[in-house]
Image (cartoon, rainbow, N blue to C red; front, side):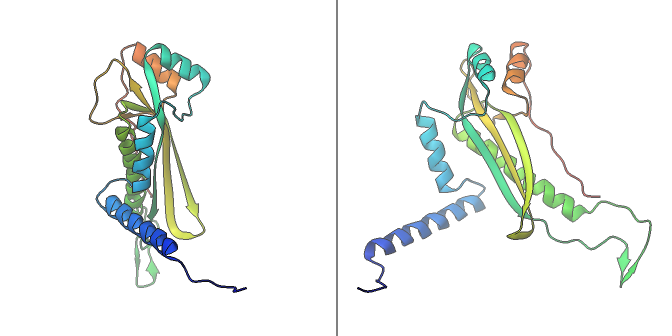
Length: 200
């Protein structure tokens, strides 16, 4: 009985298809879009009556009472290499003491990573036809396998208001579903999440 066998035509075709999909996904990301797998997942979600959500039972019941329909849980993530910045005030091995200033390269990296994560979250919500994303939670992390890199993950529940027209850009809010519903009933609309980082 042989210990090895040559890869058949089916295996080679599967590898070629996977490589082609990966290449197409990278091109989509470079254009500012979403990977093909994410696009397929969102397309299936938009055709399905079932949805994923992190809304509590009370939040869902209150949302339903004002015509707010959850469409699905959406997320955006970005793993970003932060880079390196020379310590301010050091010249030729000599370091000046008492200098305090922003490390602009590091601040820009943190802001760019977060902006990309939120941008992808908005893209997913838009593909579902959402008016807003409620309960947005932002987490950051670092990984041993990616030295010098940070990860931002933004997750929330995309919702649609039945009586409203389609919007160009879904609104993001970190308000819980109940708080969003209360503001909506009072005639207020959240405009978005304001975010910024500074490394000093």
